[in-house]
Length: 455
Length: 162
Image (cartoon, rainbow over all chains, first blue to last red; front, top):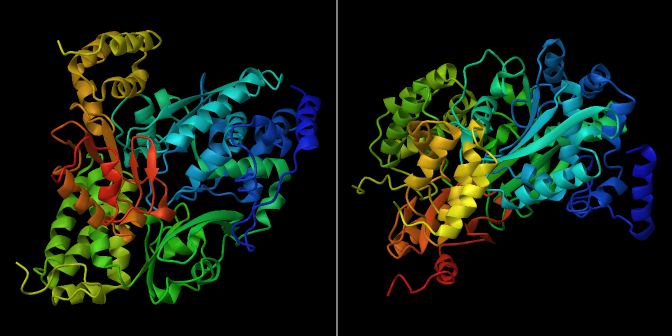
């Protein structure tokens, strides 16, 4: 496959079809979402017509491992799944590791309730992710890649499978890709309904055909990962961003965003707002602008009481912080994670205390059970919180909950155990008065049966 | 020996052919068994154990870990009711209550007539139009406690409240 062939396909499509630009809001900057709702996800030709596979070609012909990693470092791209680890640095780990086989995995196990951007990208622009995986493979010197897609995303299984098939047919995957003497192929693995499998070490266990329990780190996956070989795991949005960065250069990406959080991020907003949906915006935008500007504020006659950022791994953000910019570092300071950009807005009809219970129950159900802080600690938290919700709480319970959460946070093996306590801790920090009201048999939202007469 | 349909059994063994001795194919084979038999019968577990050279204990461990693998046979229609964050905000709690009362089953159980199996999904990634409920391959959006029974009725043989 030469550049001429790519251009030929592009021109033949463009001769018959004009692609529109689509935005959900005028303020959006669509770098990563450029093709979403514009091209037919099943047509590799339409993707090529929008400069598709040009980045992978460029990475193979004009660049080498070092220069790809350098470009990604320069762009300031940080992992888009929640950990926010700089992608360029992650990739550079593989440079010093020698092995006969290396792997790259696309983590499409988007399990965080409230996040759905990965699904949108997988379903509507699958080739961008396949291309990102090819570029990642070149940078990490991997000859085999995996897509780990969660079971729930039925439509995405089909789009990715078709995309891989079409790419293979045109010689972008398989032996001697783009006729450049490099071998790379991709296999799909479907999850089976386990949230913890989104954690990279649990994900690798799952691909190996085992229970999805987390592994202790170190050794880090870059040294010993899948089947004991060096492995790089990247999120869907990260890989889609990589494609655009290599295609248009680091500057096209890092001109947006803040000092430490470069580029655009795709926010998925759901819950009690007039215009929920997904929007690609520069990092650094404030919650207030996002919720009241772009999503047009609360439903008629209601008041927004809190905003949940990052789902069960994030936390409740109170009104005094809605003006601060949404970026990765600030959110770490506030004890909440920006996560993958999923934001759920709640109003006065929702009880935050009851919602915390829902998150803890979720954490317990999805705990892999390997380490005891997560397995037992969450159980204990639930028991205490339930007694508060049922109106049987004691004032010292709140202190106990805080202590317990801090211990679970510091002693769990993996990110799941660490993050399960985030919503509860942030609620205790920002909305302690609600918990005290429950101790006094009152639930503002009228959700909990904590009244004195409820036995 | 369980009474498995010969045709599906042949399909399974043909699929297995590709993955002999490949231990990491366990997940793929279990998915295949779910597709063909709506559960993972012991007979199939024994075959997998032999052909992939993994212990029965390992297979049981994997099946019990993941929510989309089951030892018990699932019903004709599988309900994935989303109980994620956004759907919680859209009152999924009451939808769940209603469905459980109507079908007289809890999560991960099957109705007496083998028509429905109820699963709790987290989440279906359809957060803008919650509550989301998927029955087999059909996605139902904006489900409420008031319209959920009507949706279920489309899949039932005879009403559960008669």
